[in-house]
Picture: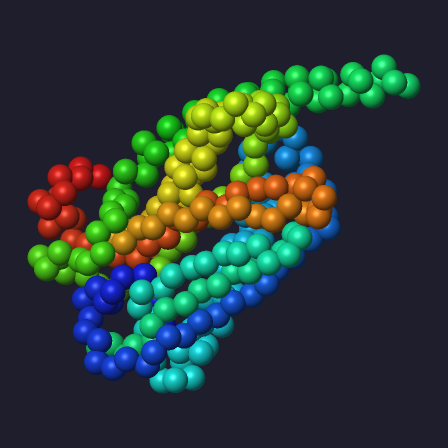
Length: 104
Length: 164
């Protein structure tokens, strides 16, 4: 599965469109990570636990999106976009969407 | 007892200011060092590959960072918020975070054998506070992403003048 946020896959031609595919996941912050982050919040700087958490969650959203595209018979996803929204206290939704296509 | 609780806030403010400033300076030094080492990956916001470039494979690359402001600067920003205007203490933080996210994205591209990232986008999203009463941890996520491609070195040099 080739994933790209460009209109077309560089060096390839799109021969078929399958429509929008998307994947999302909602993650809450882990209590252990929350304590570390709360301490870090006093002195400022990177909250590493959250960086990893969001990075993993986004990976999961991308995997779900890829699976959906595969089921439709696509071999690439173009024009991928991301959206992050805070749905509740301490929880965030990571959402990835794009257009499933077949390229050659 | 009252004196102790009166002292806690100033001590925390001073401690946060001191540690925050030290960490900020260290981060800026690291950024300069890393940025000088990552010039071989070129990040562009163009959407399409120029026709002259021959491209082999491509892949989505992402770099992200979650940051928070220190207690002292949050306090200072709160005071500044009363009169309005430019909140200067937040600008360096967001700038550092964007540079860090871009560097991480370039790092991922480099590690996977690509030398150029096109259609680079940077997104900023605030994370919800961990407690409902407006207290607790708050952070901002900065995410940089783009499509990593491998471009013939000579062609890229002719088009961009990037020396690598």
